Length: 303
Image: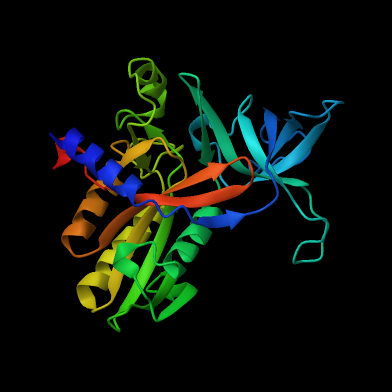
């Protein structure tokens, strides 16, 4: 029954598609990751890549704001790059990388999906979406500011909504998706059993941790806990927005792989934190567009 409702939600949303560019730049360039971290610069935020159209197959360095993303940006992955401008960085040092990874590429059942991996782009998309009134619960805001500190955390946005109520908004990028809310180790087995590539679940968080008993992202966990505290103790609206930079997702769920975050998110929702998700589509032309709002649900076994 719930699958039918989500598909109905999908078609209604698509019929009202905004189709407005949130980002436009020069065409992206395709490349293959050959080593990460780079052999020259050992940080995991720099990878050695070879441009697909390079006649010499020369290795160059590309910056990635995200880590491995479940293998999406690891060795042998196909990624899409933006050429960085030649000017120096803000600290007046020359750039280490001439390119930046904005998207990864997934090919499944002869369908190519572009997946935005840069969390800073997610923040930009939310900013533009608020200004363009794409987000139904944040229409006609009267004030919008970036990176404000509340309690012990710095949140991405704060402002005043159309009803003169203060709000805080935190953004989380969601690069990973699967047909089931499952672990990275088993997701590739699931891929082979489903016919449609557009019925996936986007999930967050997922990543490396030393012990399974630890949270995947202590910072993300702290954010949701402090949003809950602010919501309970003040009249400020607290909103958590998950940004899904891929078109093959039907619904968002907190990951079952991090029980700490799953329970914290569920408790925060009970106490008034607004949990929303939006979808953005990428094109190799260097354009990203607002697609639609995505339903948010909690895994059935935990409801």
